[in-house]
Length: 637
Ligand code: ADP
Image (cartoon, rainbow, N blue to C red; front, side):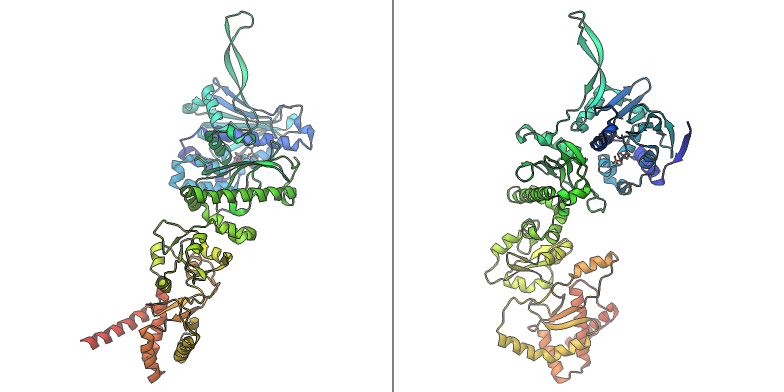
């Protein structure tokens, strides 16, 4: 038999290096990872054998076996699952460009992960964790359905290379043989192995068996004990989601969560229910307490594990959840779906649609209840996942208002870290107030000191303070809540004091010509000039068009290097400000006055500063201000 020596892909080398040198606590998770791989391989074989019974190979009992050999110093995890061909083993264990790997390595550079190596599980780099405890690993495998001579032996000491060789293997499936490091020999002990299995793999659906030595009463001689070796199943295999709620302890729920989510902390909420009617299924779902690091990555795996009558069909069934609930983990077990359901069928299956609807409703109801009854827990959840949940307002038209009810915001009327809901906002707004107002800021302090709030403060209107840039986008999608338009204080026309039509006309007439002049002079920079309904003490400000992009958002996108279309703003002037009375006087005397021209430029620069931008030409701005200061000083000297 020829043995081929191959080199690991660079990524794998780096990964192994990190595994071996950076991670040294929680090494026991290697066993969880190997058992989980074995169980997956059995699930796949079981699933494929539904349509091709020859894959069973007279081996009717699916089983994962752990063998400890103290003399050889090896620990072996075997399964009678699907197995791998030579090409598959090279692909799976030598080449991986698995989606999780790169992110995992990036995250490993981060101190948090180094201190919490348990986060490994999140990234699905399972098999390589063997090298935390073993200095050499051999994998012997044979694909189910092929003949015994098509076995393969893979071996590596994690030194950059691995070998593969053709071998004979009588039984289908895979053996992973770990040559344990000297100081990891504890994993050869029965009690250590069984406690790790119980802790991490108790719910694995297939029996994890190990041969153990037990003292038993001799059958031949009464009263005499003899030592015998027998197989013992280490895991309980209980499908916890099918049990009655009242028979499950919190600890059991939490343990199962850790098992399905690969998370090490307890979940924030357990949602366990059975649906009957059009579609019969059990769901055990969890809201995690922390956002996983890859939540916003493209490759983030979405959806609970799907079972059909206890047979696992797929790891992540994304059709069961809308994208904006992608943080939910757990299992769903259907009683009516066919076992051979494929991804294609799932996409257009009415039963799946019904399940998705039921699950979505249940989760949103649970969140609503959490918000009302356990606000602190809800707040913690919201800080971790609110950003994802909000996407629903944009994508799920039919549940827009329900999701909007889950939003919470600080406001100009509430202290820091005190929150209001849209409902509360609407319930407490003055009778004459017609719209819901918000301001987007990068911090609460910055938002609160904005001149755009002047008129709202004067009227005593509450303004929601939003600190997440996506909020502007979300509010645009929401558009209105309970029949009230949702409006940014920096966009569109705002008129809080309804003036008499006559009075308005008069003011407009008075400033008409001067406004034309300003518009003409600033034509390259702004779209329009108009009288402001939102200013009290400040002379002027820039506003975006209704439905336009918030300047905060625009800055953010620009800083991310994105192309943002040119958005000319509207310059609003405060007709009640003394400055305009003075400018009007100058204008009436000489509309071509140089002073007026200078003032108009200064006005625009000021407005830029107020929205958080820079003056167009900071040098010219400083020079103009200095000139004014000198003039004023001369006058007062
Ligand atoms: P993951 O299990 O998250 O995919 P691993 O690194 O643990 O990542 O395994 C990589 C791949 O190797 C698996 O996706 C699977 O294809 C293959 N594999 C690992 N263990 C087994 C096994 N016991 N039987 C069959 N295939 C396996």
